[in-house]
Length: 183
Image 1 (cartoon, helix red, strand yellow):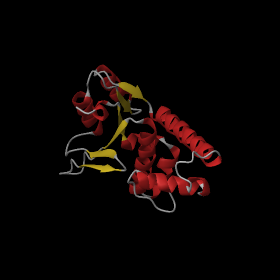
Image 2 (tube, rainbow, N blue to C red):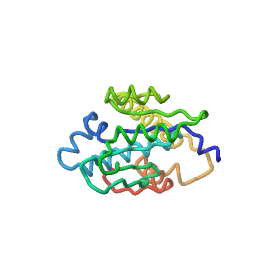
Image 3 (cartoon, rainbow, N blue to C red):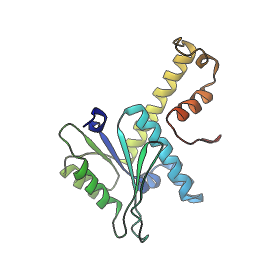
Image 4 (cartoon, helix red, strand yellow):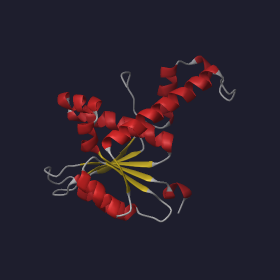
């Protein structure tokens, strides 16, 4: 098994975060897809920063025949199977991904799910805590980008000539993410 396969995993209850984070909750009022995309974008940035594998689970309990899995910005995205809740899928993933050299984190504010995940050896993170962690990571990345812009390492001479926004776009391109002018 490759070293990268052993890294820590963050399992995220997607709709729980959307409902708990003010920015996403507001986006969800006008369109759930936009809120999901913003969440995935934020988590992709966090994954790149932290080195943790991020898996987001969206509850498709009432949608027959789903059970879709795909990657967006290198974040694994699961829509649950028919008659499977996000909580059940997260519990299953905790069991599947558990390894003695890997720490599993479950991000949800559902207290029952937190206790079940903890019972399976995962560490729990509330929606509020995850938002704070992601915002702190974003601030640290911005500081590093500014430092590299002000005191560039001479490995890429064009870097010192780009704005912070241009550097962010280039970083997203490097990671293979889609982007648009507004994000």
